[in-house]
Length: 204
Image 1: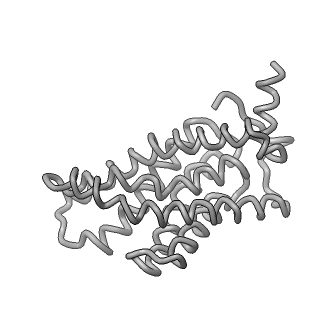
Image 2 (image 1 turned 60 degrees about the vertical axis):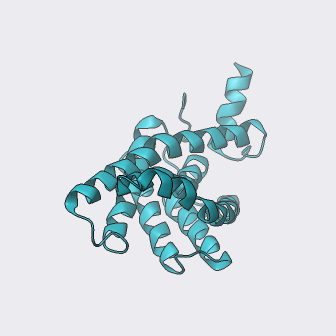
Image 3 (image 1 turned 30 degrees about the horizontal axis):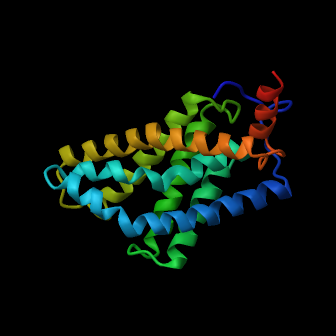
């Protein structure tokens, strides 16, 4: 991302439009998460047949909501709010993981949130994006160690953590940036910093 706009400083106060936009993003991603849950096992099972941790390479889409929420809203709590709501919506529609989906959403959102918090919620470039994406994946991986992969040795567990964290950092962040820029160019984010950045790029 080429520029950072934070008004007179890091944004902290939430507006009604921020809450509504987070809710909209959460619902939209929740439906997408549910749909991905129906098909992800096909490629995941294929690549993990020889080395189980490789399945992590197809789990990163479940963390995009929190990254997009933070890129758009740019306020403390945006990643947790958006990711958790997406998890709740997908669980309500119906997933094979049931209510544990909500626990995953919380862990993922907290990891992404921490990446931006470490930069004081004042930077929205690649450093916090990559860090937040990696931490979101790492938090989820640790949760899965004790929920799903209890029979794995530490070699598999560590490999899974780095594969999931790395794929979220790279692919999840890239997709989140692309979606945010697309929405900004379409005029859907006029009330948010990405929309302002898009107008400035057009003007220049």
